[in-house]
Image (cartoon, rainbow, N blue to C red; front, side, top):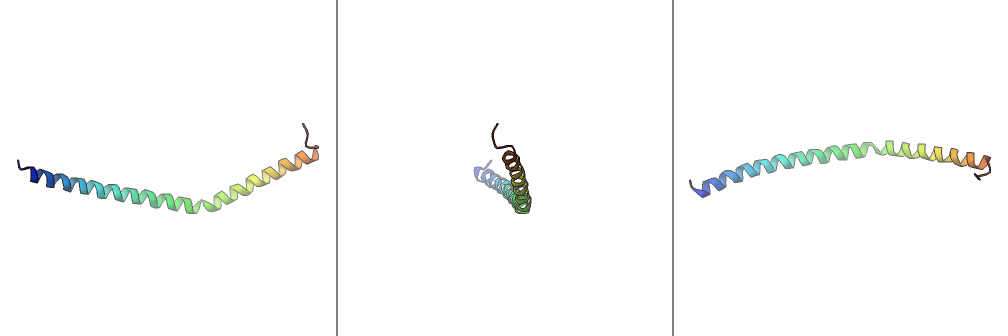
Length: 68
């Protein structure tokens, strides 16, 4: 067997695997970006909810004198 032919065969296989890996990585990156960009409003809403809970806790503490 000629080592040059073996090398060429391995290069083609490696290049094909590399292309598949690149496409998979691009797909994962695109999906992550899509999820991150659509969750901004959800995160903002969650922040508002946490702020409301904090205000209620603070109001309850003020009504009771804020001591244990």
